[in-house]
Image (cartoon, rainbow, N blue to C red; front, top):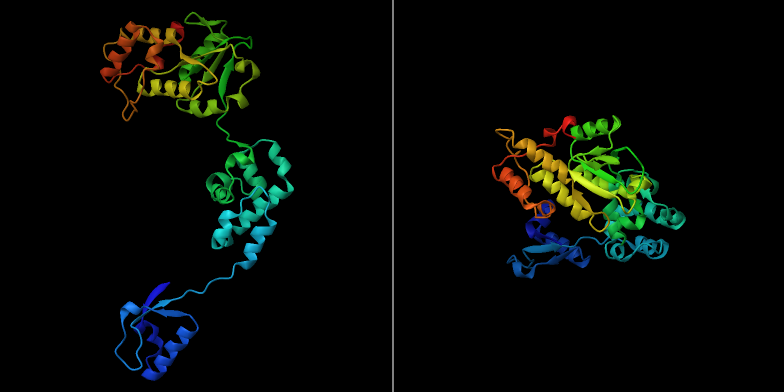
Length: 326
């Protein structure tokens, strides 16, 4: 309800005498369109009127919507929210009905996984509706989550080079593009080992992008890459960000894959770094929140050397190594 003064109520009736104004206010009261604010006290005239009133908003009739919600929805949709908020249902109705029709007529399609955008278009004829528009909100109000639609999120395709499909094998994930291309060329030129370890597949991690790409490893990786006895190595820059990427990757997928630092490559980095008078300064705004997980994979001597680099706000890029070092 909205609070309004007597003067505002009579604004359009200033030309009437007081008795006519009084009768006008009485009619509004009889119709239930206004209610007196008794705390505002009377205007001191006879017959008296209160100085302020509550404007009573007309209640909209949602009975047709209530019937629709109760008796036409799919059993997969919870009716609780919209029964309690029919005004919201009026706004959402077009999208809810499209979802309802899909669930009633095409529920079998949910047995086959589809990408988020594909399912979104299939239901609402808008490919971004589920990801960037009202889709998630509509689902929540219907008592559903995105998982109920059997969808998967797409990522940038995993970039990799297969040197051999023999299993079990060593798979090496590389943070940056240059080492990926250099090592790939090295293997293409007839070599099978890098720093003394036989490598069957190289994966380009694209920095932090590997975290998301690896979420779809089961979907985009070839069968040989998922062999349970494969060893997965990681090699990135010797800085906080590179270490953080490894730790996030290893922790996020530790229930399925054991990912370990490629120790001989880091050892080679440190060896070459000792010949350089001044290493580059650590890039600004790096997240320095790393644990001991990365360092636990190295011996004490190597850990001290790496920590000394970091403590001086310096870093060693992967590019310190080239084909001649492999």
